[in-house]
Figure 1 (cartoon, rainbow, N blue to C red):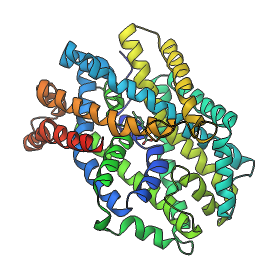
Figure 2: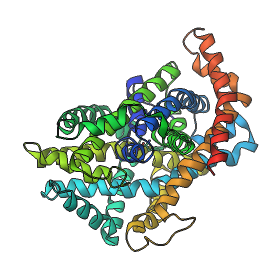
Figure 3: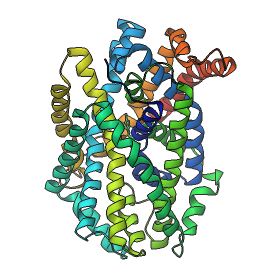
Figure 4: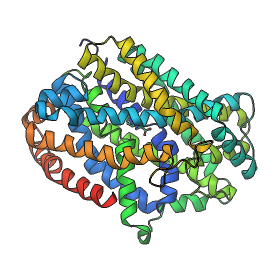
Length: 440
Ligand code: PFF
């Protein structure tokens, strides 16, 4: 496999591109609002800095050591008994892509609508109504889903360096800058400070088991852990670059992006009197309120949704790459066939998710519609199981290999590695296991 990232920076930015996406800007704000605001943020922060960082370093190490995608890595490093556990992350990525493309499609739709001047309004009722109209319309929901998926497939067809790396390198920094500008406008709206307080001032009375379960699900989702994305990207990384440090950068950048996402979306919701707990529509309903209070609001709206789209694309391409890489490794398929084949599958599995807010709203299983069920089952069940499997494989079955990957820079940091091993081999499986079992 000749393709590699062209530099360590390119690798970090691409991995951060995978991590930073709709998770930070769409999912984090409404989940924080529903799960106790600041309490949720703190638990999320803690989990990301400990288990998240350890698992991310390990995933990258497994990828680089094996030079394969996630299923291949489990098989090569663990042996045949790990075959199916190595496929689980890939299956998870496939399901996530189904609903991820639906939300990506909403972003694409909002970009289009902002270009034709149909997004900005200062009336909370109008904003909520427009959003509902979009997601409830089956044709639109499915068509935008297909459009977003098509864009992802087009990029992945270009291969890692040409497609994924180039896009991340320029557009991720632009996203951060624009978010900062919009935050300044949002938090200075009258009444918005209550939202900042809600997000940042600790309120421990809100801390409950559900908070921890939700935070863990989001930590996996937002850091792209447990579905082989970091393994797959690690496989494209050349020897010599420092893994734990790269993983540290990715985690910190993601945390900052989530914090910015929260500060971006929640304060204007408070200013407008919107219910911040309203769920998945929050970002799309609350953001246009900021634009209504800015000069050239329509322009900023278009810019914002363009960058949201890019953030979503740099993530969706990693999900598609995980699956495509599997078919290329396992069945010797060409990139083209692998990408096209999986895209068709992802389109089909996304249809029930796309219809979950319209005609199939009342079709529920375990009390959840298809969209929620796919989200819940992946984030709260499948990702944690993959996380435990990854930790056990690395901590108990091939630590030597993992360690040598981590220590390519001359014998330093022995204590850090020892601590890392304890986290990976003992703390991660037990902690994730307890949360998982109690949650289910
Ligand atoms: N981390 C991405 C986000 O937060 O939007 C979503 C994601 C991408 C999850 C890639 C998993 C993955 F492998």
